[in-house]
Every structure is written in C-alpha cells, then in structure tokens.
Image (cartoon, rainbow, N blue to C red):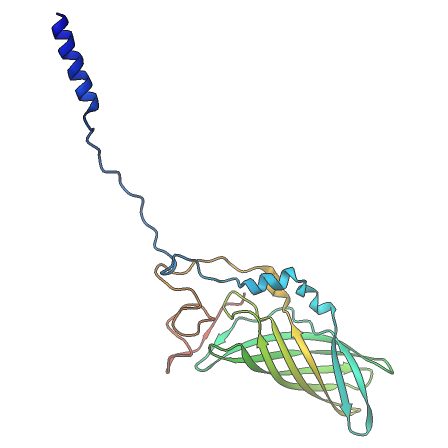
Length: 243
C-alpha cells in the first residue's frame, strides 16, 4: 500500500513539473506610427511656446517706433500699435506661400501730438523652404493731420514654422507711403507682428498612418499633407484651413 502511495506521489510531482502547453495569445492590433520614427506630426512649434513664455503676447501693447518724413515739412517720430487679430491660413500656390493678415493700427504722432487710425491688410510672400520673405500692405487712414490711404512694402522673417495649424510670428522692416489731404509722407519702422489667434491653440492631430511629419513631407515642408504642392509643376492651388 505504501509502495502504491509512493508511486502515485511521484506521478503527481512529475505531472506538475512538466511544462504546460501554452496557447497563443492574440497580439493587440498594431497601430501604424505617424511616421517612420513613430512621432506625431509637429503641429505646434516650440517657438510658439517660447513666444508665450517670454511674454510676446504683450507685443500689441508695446508701440512700434516709426520715423516719418515729408517734403516741405519737419520730420516726426510716430508711435504705432499694430494689432493683427488673426492671420488667415497659408495659401500654397505654385511657387510661393501667401499669408494674409488684416490689422488695425492706432498711431500717435509726437511733437505736436496728432492721433491717427489705420485699418487694412497685409500679404506676406515666402518662397518654399524659406523663412525670409517680402510683404505688401494697404490701409485706409483717418487722422487729425489728414486722412487718405497708405501703401507699404518690406522684408519679413517668420520665426515660427509655417503649417496649416500654426500662426506666423514675424519681424519685418516696413516702408510706407501715405497720401492725405495734407500731402504725401513716408515712414519706416521695425515691425514685430504676433497675431492674436496664435494663443487660441492648435489641434493636436496626428499624421496619417505611415505619413511623415511636416518637416519631411514632399512639397512644402511647412504645410500639411496633400497631393498638391507648390514644389510640383502644374499643381493646383489649395487653401489651408486657418489655425
């Protein structure tokens, strides 16, 4: 009897020690990475965060200093507060990238003080893959020293990567000419522009499965994906959604 118990105990130990047959565990469905490095599309630039943390949102409160001259009248210094409520989304046409930004601009001419108000729009033109571009603007002018129209041209540099979900933050040198009932005049200034809709946020969309981040896409690296791009001859224009 004791012999039978010993044999039974040995069989029990051997069965317990034998490796169990493992059933295959179904693997979780793999999610295609946003790009070849598994990163999401960089829709929000770190430079926009830098702008926020360094207080550049206060820029509309800090006046630009303009130097004005006119034939037959003394030169003046002018303080201006250009306010760009928003910048429309980038318009990618064959060749350059266009950005449109409407603005209003209170001004104070110094010694003697005269009040003015401008309202108009600015168009910035950037070659693909470039941050340095040119701008042109037009506005109506109402002021205590004459009313009329204003036209301006200049060079502009975009501090933030252009993308359908970002807003340009630009530093520009702008030369303007105004035509009023009091005569024509010109002025020049260093213009820093931070459209207010920059601070409304950007959608954290991921790229298409297997796609590439905006810095590596074919076509304009600053713009979203799509079959049309200004780098491909014969492509059709497309309008990117505003940020």
